[in-house]
Amino acid sequence: MRKSYAVTSQQPLLLVVYATLIISLFNTDNFSKSRSYGHDFIPDESASFLSFANQLKTESELVQNNLANGNIDLAKEHAIRAIELLNSTDPVNNATWKDEIAERNQRVANELVRSVSSLENKTMPSSQSEQQH
Image (cartoon, rainbow, N blue to C red; front, side):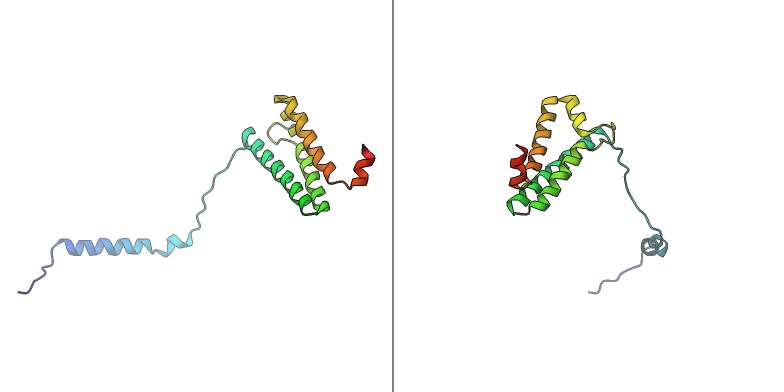
C-alpha cells in the first residue's frame, strides 16, 4: 500500500516562514555592520590596590628568580621597579602607595619598605654591599 502525502494548508506557510528566517539570518546587511561590546571600569581603591599588590609581588618574584639564575643585572632592574612601584602614586587617592599603606598600618608599611630595600641590597655586588654596612 502506497502512502500519499497531501499538501496541507500549513505547509506553504511553513515554507514561507523558513525562507524568511533563512534570508534574515544570512542577510548581508547583518555582516556589514561592526558591533563591539565593552565595559568601562571605573577605578576604585580596591582594584587599584590589588593591581599594585600583584605587580609588586611579580617584581619581587622576578628578582628572586633572576638571582637564582645568576642574572644580577636583570634582578637589579626588577628591584628598582619594585621600589618605583612602592613610591608610585595611587591614581584614586593621589598619594604614594607607601603612604596609603602607612595610613592604615604603619608597621606593614615599614616592613614592606624594608623588604623592597632588601631586594635591592641582594642585587648589589658583594663589595658594594659590604662597604655600605
